[in-house]
Image (cartoon, rainbow, N blue to C red; front, side):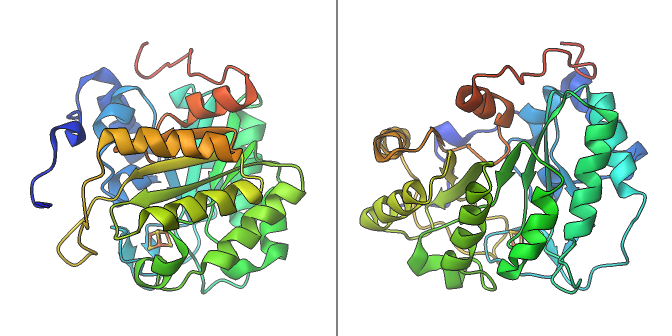
Length: 298
Ligand code: SF4
Protein backbone atom coordinates (compact mmCIF):
# COMPACT_ATOMS: atom_id res chain seq x y z
CA UNK A 1 0.00 0.00 0.00
CA UNK A 2 1.26 3.48 -0.90
CA UNK A 3 1.31 5.39 2.39
CA UNK A 4 3.18 8.40 1.05
CA UNK A 5 0.06 9.98 -0.48
CA UNK A 6 -2.92 10.84 1.70
CA UNK A 7 -6.19 9.35 0.47
CA UNK A 8 -8.96 11.75 -0.55
CA UNK A 9 -10.97 11.21 2.65
CA UNK A 10 -8.12 12.66 4.73
CA UNK A 11 -7.95 16.14 3.23
CA UNK A 12 -8.27 18.63 6.08
CA UNK A 13 -9.99 22.01 5.97
CA UNK A 14 -7.58 24.93 5.81
CA UNK A 15 -7.69 27.44 8.66
CA UNK A 16 -9.78 30.47 7.79
CA UNK A 17 -12.50 32.89 8.87
CA UNK A 18 -13.22 35.08 11.89
CA UNK A 19 -13.48 32.11 14.27
CA UNK A 20 -9.99 30.97 13.37
CA UNK A 21 -8.49 34.46 13.76
CA UNK A 22 -10.21 34.98 17.09
CA UNK A 23 -8.94 31.68 18.54
CA UNK A 24 -5.43 32.44 17.27
CA UNK A 25 -5.34 35.84 19.01
CA UNK A 26 -6.92 34.47 22.20
CA UNK A 27 -4.29 31.73 22.44
CA UNK A 28 -1.54 34.32 21.96
CA UNK A 29 -3.08 36.83 24.34
CA UNK A 30 -3.47 34.34 27.21
CA UNK A 31 -0.09 32.70 26.49
CA UNK A 32 -1.75 29.31 26.15
CA UNK A 33 -0.55 26.13 24.51
CA UNK A 34 -2.93 24.05 22.45
CA UNK A 35 -2.60 20.42 21.55
CA UNK A 36 -4.03 21.42 18.18
CA UNK A 37 -0.72 23.15 17.39
CA UNK A 38 1.70 21.07 19.44
CA UNK A 39 0.44 17.74 18.09
CA UNK A 40 -0.02 19.10 14.54
CA UNK A 41 -3.65 18.04 14.62
CA UNK A 42 -5.19 17.77 11.13
CA UNK A 43 -8.48 19.19 12.41
CA UNK A 44 -7.02 22.50 13.60
CA UNK A 45 -8.51 24.44 10.68
CA UNK A 46 -11.99 23.06 11.22
CA UNK A 47 -12.02 23.30 15.03
CA UNK A 48 -10.54 26.78 15.23
CA UNK A 49 -12.90 28.00 12.52
CA UNK A 50 -15.73 26.73 14.76
CA UNK A 51 -14.24 28.82 17.59
CA UNK A 52 -12.98 25.89 19.67
CA UNK A 53 -9.48 24.80 20.68
CA UNK A 54 -8.11 22.16 23.07
CA UNK A 55 -5.89 23.84 25.61
CA UNK A 56 -2.80 21.94 26.76
CA UNK A 57 -1.74 22.77 30.32
CA UNK A 58 1.49 22.21 32.27
CA UNK A 59 3.62 23.60 29.44
CA UNK A 60 4.42 22.36 25.96
CA UNK A 61 7.41 20.15 26.73
CA UNK A 62 6.67 16.54 27.65
CA UNK A 63 8.83 14.24 29.75
CA UNK A 64 7.79 11.29 27.57
CA UNK A 65 8.65 10.42 23.99
CA UNK A 66 5.74 8.56 22.45
CA UNK A 67 6.69 7.59 18.93
CA UNK A 68 3.48 8.83 17.35
CA UNK A 69 3.31 12.24 19.00
CA UNK A 70 4.58 15.59 17.73
CA UNK A 71 4.73 17.25 21.16
CA UNK A 72 8.31 18.22 22.02
CA UNK A 73 10.15 15.94 24.47
CA UNK A 74 12.56 17.38 27.02
CA UNK A 75 13.03 18.86 30.46
CA UNK A 76 9.97 21.00 31.23
CA UNK A 77 10.30 24.52 32.60
CA UNK A 78 8.97 25.54 36.00
CA UNK A 79 5.26 25.46 36.79
CA UNK A 80 3.18 28.39 35.57
CA UNK A 81 0.89 29.06 38.52
CA UNK A 82 -1.10 31.70 36.65
CA UNK A 83 -2.14 29.19 34.00
CA UNK A 84 -5.40 27.90 35.58
CA UNK A 85 -6.91 31.40 35.74
CA UNK A 86 -5.87 32.20 32.16
CA UNK A 87 -7.34 28.93 30.89
CA UNK A 88 -10.60 29.68 32.72
CA UNK A 89 -10.70 33.13 31.15
CA UNK A 90 -10.05 31.74 27.67
CA UNK A 91 -12.89 29.22 28.06
CA UNK A 92 -15.18 32.10 29.04
CA UNK A 93 -14.09 34.20 26.05
CA UNK A 94 -14.63 31.29 23.66
CA UNK A 95 -18.14 30.94 25.09
CA UNK A 96 -17.74 27.19 25.36
CA UNK A 97 -20.44 25.04 26.90
CA UNK A 98 -18.10 22.05 26.62
CA UNK A 99 -14.34 22.47 26.95
CA UNK A 100 -11.57 19.90 26.58
CA UNK A 101 -8.32 20.33 28.48
CA UNK A 102 -5.27 18.14 28.08
CA UNK A 103 -1.65 18.20 29.24
CA UNK A 104 1.81 16.93 28.59
CA UNK A 105 3.17 14.24 30.93
CA UNK A 106 5.11 15.77 33.82
CA UNK A 107 6.77 12.67 35.26
CA UNK A 108 9.41 14.76 37.05
CA UNK A 109 6.77 16.21 39.41
CA UNK A 110 5.95 14.19 42.51
CA UNK A 111 2.22 14.27 41.70
CA UNK A 112 2.63 14.26 37.91
CA UNK A 113 0.94 17.68 37.79
CA UNK A 114 -2.31 16.42 39.34
CA UNK A 115 -2.64 19.43 41.67
CA UNK A 116 -2.39 21.81 38.69
CA UNK A 117 -5.00 19.73 36.91
CA UNK A 118 -7.31 20.10 39.91
CA UNK A 119 -6.67 23.85 40.16
CA UNK A 120 -7.44 24.25 36.46
CA UNK A 121 -10.72 22.33 36.66
CA UNK A 122 -11.80 24.37 39.70
CA UNK A 123 -10.84 27.66 38.04
CA UNK A 124 -12.82 26.80 34.91
CA UNK A 125 -15.82 25.73 37.00
CA UNK A 126 -15.71 28.89 39.09
CA UNK A 127 -15.52 31.19 36.05
CA UNK A 128 -17.82 29.10 33.81
CA UNK A 129 -20.33 27.31 36.08
CA UNK A 130 -22.41 25.89 33.23
CA UNK A 131 -19.53 24.66 31.05
CA UNK A 132 -18.99 20.90 30.85
CA UNK A 133 -15.34 20.06 31.51
CA UNK A 134 -13.68 17.14 29.75
CA UNK A 135 -10.14 16.24 30.82
CA UNK A 136 -7.72 14.21 28.71
CA UNK A 137 -5.07 13.20 31.23
CA UNK A 138 -1.77 11.30 31.28
CA UNK A 139 -1.53 8.04 33.25
CA UNK A 140 0.21 9.59 36.32
CA UNK A 141 2.37 6.46 36.20
CA UNK A 142 -0.69 4.60 37.43
CA UNK A 143 -0.68 6.38 40.84
CA UNK A 144 -4.36 6.30 41.74
CA UNK A 145 -3.97 8.93 44.47
CA UNK A 146 -2.99 11.42 41.75
CA UNK A 147 -5.90 10.30 39.60
CA UNK A 148 -8.08 10.92 42.65
CA UNK A 149 -6.72 14.47 42.97
CA UNK A 150 -8.04 15.15 39.47
CA UNK A 151 -11.33 13.33 40.05
CA UNK A 152 -11.95 15.17 43.32
CA UNK A 153 -12.16 18.39 41.28
CA UNK A 154 -15.18 16.81 39.52
CA UNK A 155 -14.57 16.93 35.76
CA UNK A 156 -17.63 15.97 33.72
CA UNK A 157 -15.77 13.54 31.45
CA UNK A 158 -12.54 11.73 32.31
CA UNK A 159 -10.53 10.78 29.22
CA UNK A 160 -7.28 8.87 28.95
CA UNK A 161 -6.17 7.25 25.71
CA UNK A 162 -4.84 3.70 25.49
CA UNK A 163 -3.79 4.76 21.96
CA UNK A 164 -3.19 1.30 20.46
CA UNK A 165 -3.54 -2.45 20.93
CA UNK A 166 -1.66 -4.22 23.72
CA UNK A 167 1.12 -5.67 21.52
CA UNK A 168 2.09 -2.26 20.12
CA UNK A 169 2.19 -0.33 23.41
CA UNK A 170 5.98 -0.50 23.77
CA UNK A 171 6.90 0.73 20.26
CA UNK A 172 4.13 3.34 20.22
CA UNK A 173 4.03 4.70 23.80
CA UNK A 174 7.51 3.91 25.10
CA UNK A 175 6.93 4.78 28.78
CA UNK A 176 3.29 3.68 29.07
CA UNK A 177 1.54 0.36 29.56
CA UNK A 178 -1.77 -1.03 28.41
CA UNK A 179 -2.71 -2.54 31.79
CA UNK A 180 -1.71 0.64 33.64
CA UNK A 181 -3.86 2.84 31.41
CA UNK A 182 -6.76 0.45 31.81
CA UNK A 183 -6.43 0.52 35.58
CA UNK A 184 -6.54 4.34 35.56
CA UNK A 185 -9.68 4.26 33.41
CA UNK A 186 -11.34 1.56 35.53
CA UNK A 187 -10.60 3.56 38.66
CA UNK A 188 -12.39 6.63 37.28
CA UNK A 189 -15.29 4.44 36.22
CA UNK A 190 -15.49 2.84 39.67
CA UNK A 191 -15.93 6.31 41.13
CA UNK A 192 -18.96 6.91 38.90
CA UNK A 193 -17.41 9.18 36.27
CA UNK A 194 -18.21 9.21 32.56
CA UNK A 195 -15.07 7.70 31.07
CA UNK A 196 -13.69 8.00 27.56
CA UNK A 197 -10.69 6.56 25.78
CA UNK A 198 -9.30 6.36 22.26
CA UNK A 199 -7.17 4.35 19.86
CA UNK A 200 -5.46 5.01 16.54
CA UNK A 201 -5.47 2.60 13.61
CA UNK A 202 -2.80 2.31 10.92
CA UNK A 203 0.10 1.52 13.27
CA UNK A 204 0.41 -2.15 12.31
CA UNK A 205 -2.35 -3.63 14.45
CA UNK A 206 -4.18 -6.77 13.33
CA UNK A 207 -7.98 -6.95 13.14
CA UNK A 208 -8.20 -9.54 15.92
CA UNK A 209 -6.12 -7.23 18.16
CA UNK A 210 -8.50 -4.33 17.55
CA UNK A 211 -11.41 -6.61 18.39
CA UNK A 212 -9.72 -7.66 21.64
CA UNK A 213 -8.95 -4.05 22.56
CA UNK A 214 -12.54 -2.99 22.01
CA UNK A 215 -13.77 -5.96 24.04
CA UNK A 216 -11.32 -5.06 26.85
CA UNK A 217 -12.49 -1.46 26.91
CA UNK A 218 -16.14 -2.48 26.88
CA UNK A 219 -15.46 -4.92 29.74
CA UNK A 220 -13.83 -2.04 31.64
CA UNK A 221 -17.11 -0.12 31.30
CA UNK A 222 -15.89 2.64 29.01
CA UNK A 223 -18.64 5.02 27.98
CA UNK A 224 -17.10 6.71 24.93
CA UNK A 225 -14.46 5.41 22.48
CA UNK A 226 -12.78 7.37 19.70
CA UNK A 227 -11.06 5.59 16.81
CA UNK A 228 -9.01 7.53 14.24
CA UNK A 229 -6.32 7.15 11.59
CA UNK A 230 -2.70 7.50 12.75
CA UNK A 231 -0.84 10.24 10.86
CA UNK A 232 2.94 10.43 10.92
CA UNK A 233 3.97 13.88 12.21
CA UNK A 234 7.53 13.64 10.80
CA UNK A 235 10.01 11.15 9.36
CA UNK A 236 11.35 10.61 12.90
CA UNK A 237 7.99 9.19 14.00
CA UNK A 238 6.54 5.74 13.39
CA UNK A 239 5.62 5.10 9.77
CA UNK A 240 2.01 4.68 8.71
CA UNK A 241 1.36 0.98 8.21
CA UNK A 242 -1.81 1.50 6.16
CA UNK A 243 -4.65 3.86 5.36
CA UNK A 244 -7.82 2.58 6.95
CA UNK A 245 -10.80 2.75 4.58
CA UNK A 246 -13.91 4.66 5.71
CA UNK A 247 -15.98 1.45 5.57
CA UNK A 248 -13.65 -0.20 8.08
CA UNK A 249 -14.14 2.67 10.53
CA UNK A 250 -17.90 2.12 10.22
CA UNK A 251 -17.43 -1.58 10.98
CA UNK A 252 -15.42 -0.81 14.12
CA UNK A 253 -18.09 1.57 15.28
CA UNK A 254 -20.72 -1.14 14.88
CA UNK A 255 -18.46 -3.65 16.60
CA UNK A 256 -17.90 -1.30 19.54
CA UNK A 257 -21.58 -0.54 19.99
CA UNK A 258 -22.41 -4.26 19.82
CA UNK A 259 -19.70 -4.89 22.44
CA UNK A 260 -21.52 -2.53 24.80
CA UNK A 261 -19.80 0.84 24.46
CA UNK A 262 -22.15 3.82 24.82
CA UNK A 263 -20.74 6.03 22.05
CA UNK A 264 -18.15 5.12 19.42
CA UNK A 265 -16.81 7.94 17.26
CA UNK A 266 -14.91 6.22 14.46
CA UNK A 267 -13.46 7.83 11.35
CA UNK A 268 -10.17 8.76 9.72
CA UNK A 269 -10.14 12.31 11.11
CA UNK A 270 -11.50 11.46 14.55
CA UNK A 271 -9.32 12.61 17.43
CA UNK A 272 -10.00 12.64 21.19
CA UNK A 273 -11.31 16.15 21.29
CA UNK A 274 -12.75 16.33 17.78
CA UNK A 275 -16.45 17.26 18.14
CA UNK A 276 -16.17 16.21 21.80
CA UNK A 277 -19.20 18.33 22.61
CA UNK A 278 -21.35 16.26 20.26
CA UNK A 279 -19.99 12.93 21.55
CA UNK A 280 -20.82 13.99 25.06
CA UNK A 281 -24.28 15.11 24.04
CA UNK A 282 -24.94 11.74 22.42
CA UNK A 283 -23.83 9.96 25.58
CA UNK A 284 -25.56 12.09 28.17
CA UNK A 285 -28.47 13.40 26.10
CA UNK A 286 -27.57 16.84 27.46
CA UNK A 287 -27.02 19.67 25.00
CA UNK A 288 -23.43 20.81 25.53
CA UNK A 289 -23.18 22.24 22.01
CA UNK A 290 -21.58 25.62 21.70
CA UNK A 291 -24.73 27.45 20.85
CA UNK A 292 -23.33 30.68 22.26
CA UNK A 293 -20.15 30.69 20.25
CA UNK A 294 -19.01 34.21 20.87
CA UNK A 295 -15.78 33.97 18.91
CA UNK A 296 -17.05 32.49 15.69
CA UNK A 297 -20.08 34.71 15.78
CA UNK A 298 -22.08 31.59 15.05
S1 SF4 B 1 2.68 11.62 26.92
FE1 SF4 B 1 3.14 10.92 24.83
S2 SF4 B 1 1.24 11.43 23.67
FE2 SF4 B 1 1.17 12.64 25.56
S3 SF4 B 1 2.10 14.63 25.03
FE3 SF4 B 1 3.73 13.32 25.88
S4 SF4 B 1 4.72 12.38 24.10
FE4 SF4 B 1 2.70 13.16 23.41
